[in-house]
Amino acid sequence: MLYFQKVSELLRINIMDISIFLKHLGEIASSPFAFIGYIAVLASWIYVLTSQQRLKTISKIIKTLPEKDRTTIL
Image 1 (cartoon, rainbow, N blue to C red):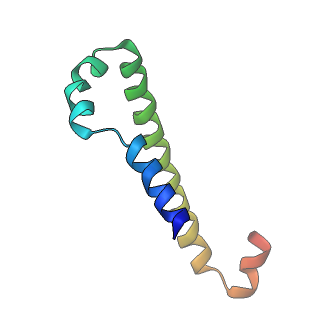
Image 2 (image 1 turned 60 degrees about the vertical axis):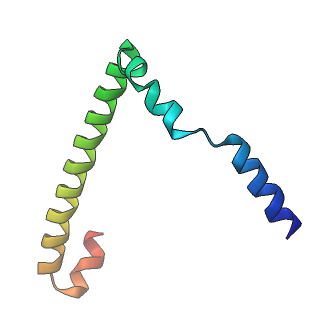
């Protein structure tokens, strides 16, 4: 029990108040690094979407094969 009390105390100290974050969000968004971050997030999102679509297509193809042939493909 003592361990969990210490952990909860540490968490309380390190948690930033959300109002402070929201107050400075305008300053953060005006940074050139923020634009780079937005581009990185967009590129990551597009990569994940295309990967998911590719996996869905592959899984549809694998489902059409007989079970004994599926292991040779994988």
